Image (cartoon, rainbow, N blue to C red; front, side):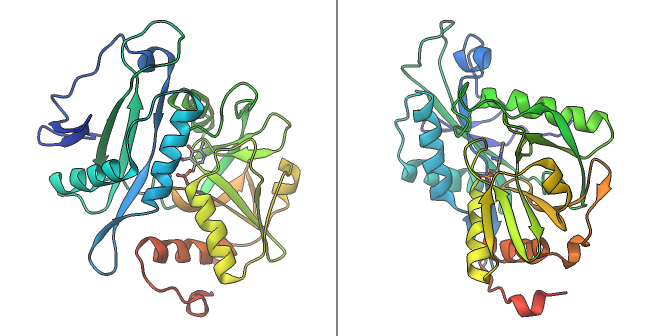
Length: 300
Ligand code: PMP
């Protein structure tokens, strides 16, 4: 089992810095019993100047607040105090390149009433690319993404992730690396913890918002396409259309940008190394490290 902390690890909890091994949570909490909690996932990078910077930190904390508001968990923190806490946690643990996990959770309550109070914690650990560096063999899941009429799917809520666990575990049990989930209408939605893009005839496509978590990495990829003059289209599309793609990739804070080898055993026509996704992957890496990116030098 991966060890996320040791006896020296410090985390942030409700305004204090505590040893992770000594911090306590109530077993009668509404979050533990009903999945009524919100989390974020951020990455810190040691940038070219040597300074440690958390990528898109304001965007993540804006989403953290919105996620709580959408499901009526009281949110009483400013971005500044939580951003400062993230940097402090990195410093106290001597971390430079790290994954940062803020979590808001609710106090003891066995009813289904909205929370009146909430706690916040922030921890961090070293974590390599979540889906690895290899091209992914992806399987269309038998699970759909949750119905947007049954949940606030744009809220990064803990409870939603049981769907992600089921899909990911099903794909792995069948020998694949990761799952792809469709939406309630049978269109392509996203991965259990990542958004999807594909390339066809010089254009990049991605599922339109509505049935997905609109990721911050997804927004960054859209930004990169605009900067590099790569045409980009957001639309709904089927799995059959995706199977005609030349190349496909997943993106997310934890996974960063990772190309696909195949979908349901069928490979794509363009090697990922020669695809627009590869250029976007390199541009993303340059962006998080605050390095200049020159496309000409990168084209294979
Ligand atoms: N979709 C889902 C379901 C996710 O869990 C994530 C990871 N937060 C993403 C997409 C990607 O979001 P982001 O780029 O903001 O990390």
